Length: 414
Length: 69
Image (cartoon, rainbow over all chains, first blue to last red; front, side, top):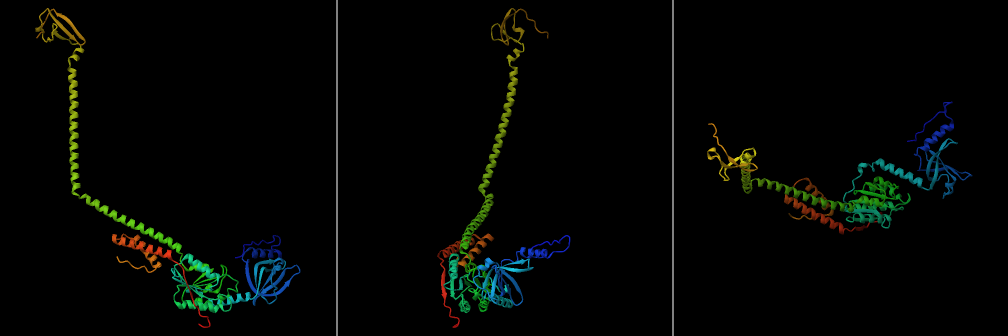
């Protein structure tokens, strides 16, 4: 809990000087941050005002005492004159006075009055009821998620009541509010609060009850520390939300209530679900509804399509179409092979024509042969027996004709 | 399908939640699904209308003075 302070011996002597040790203690206490910004209650004694203006005194209770100092500046702001025997509440931080070797509370605020006594009472009541088990966690009930009627115990003229109404109006106007007016401070307040709480419970109408009061001094809020009030809250058949004072105020009903809200406003917030949120959720649900039905329908549609596809396989029309297709295919194949055949024949013909062409007379002439015609006629001479010298003939070569005369014929030896 | 009376905003809201959940969880017979959908739409309209007309009702209880009660 305390700050980490490393102790270092004086190297020569292997021991501390008094100043060193107290310095470490000061560092540990003040550096820890633990003993700061705290309230302590007790009875004032040994009250001294020094000539410089500082005030020194001791706060004590039956068992112990605490030195306190108020520095001049704070002392000047003191609005009352503390007397030995006064009960007081001091606020400040613990410091260590090296010169005296003791720690003290440096007080920046000193409250007078029965507050110290009140505080003691507060602790006494709280401890007693706690020991009875009145604040036990297992006694706490869950607040209803959807209260229809909200009971409120507070003053009809207080700001708390308006705060609560405002929150409920904004947050959940579906609920009904039943106010049981009660004094919330003063001597009559505790009995009034108990009566109001009991009256609300007696109606049997409320789903949850808010016990609330706006901020105020500890004395103002004191009714909510009253034992009878605390017991009534703890024993309420209807779950109770406490919303007393400001955030930092704690009253004993806060421990007894099923739910402790820091303020009346927060109590109202805790009491009801937020309709703005619910409205959003409604919209979301509506959207989901559409989406799911669409999806669901799509599911059915897909099923139907699947069946349709399955049916189509067995459709006679489709069969016929398939057969027709097959016929078409066969025909195409036949046509294709016919075309192939024709092409092949055409190719062969080409080859034959080529061969024929090579037999053409002109080609023969080009190789050096000549045709022989009788005289200038077209009669082709194919045998020497047709020729009787002197016979005029025409020689036809590849590139023209020549006139010649046959002077002698000689048959080929057989 | 007979139209059920919606008891309250809360009941309606809860029913709507359960309808959406039911639709989400499984494939329903078509007619059943459409009936659920129709009911859901009707409830959501009811809830919205309730929200629209909601006005905080405030009553004050007469508390007898403690010493007389």
